[in-house]
Image (cartoon, rainbow, N blue to C red; front, top):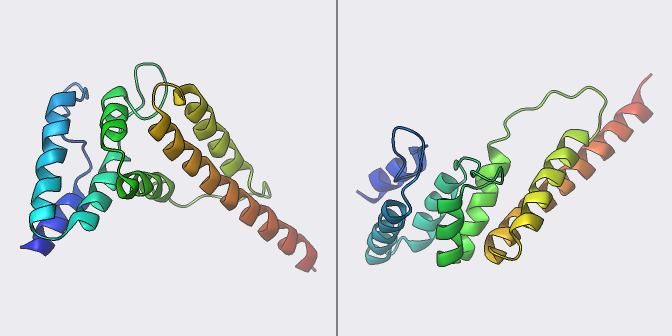
Length: 161
């Protein structure tokens, strides 16, 4: 039963509380997360549940103000303040990037993403400090990846015949 519940949470792509227009009802989302976290607590699966919730929330859309994540998800993340959920939002975002095509640009793609997430972090830093930290962590992950690809390109250039 636990593995089926994990599979369900892990395979969900739509943020709970989302209507047919793509809008998320904050109350519904809060109730859903509270219910899932309670069930996970009762079955000693808190960390696994938070991991799945974080990855699911990483699928959130951009907010009406052009900043990611959308307002209801920001509110929920800020209210909960769970280290595990926040970390797994970051992991979900970073893993959702998929494969990238390289054309001698080193880590330029990652630097652009780092800039985007850092910019959003700065915009939200006053009203949503916890969400701002999550976004800064995502930016740092992209910084690290950019350095990796810069080094990779340097090595490729030095070893070409």
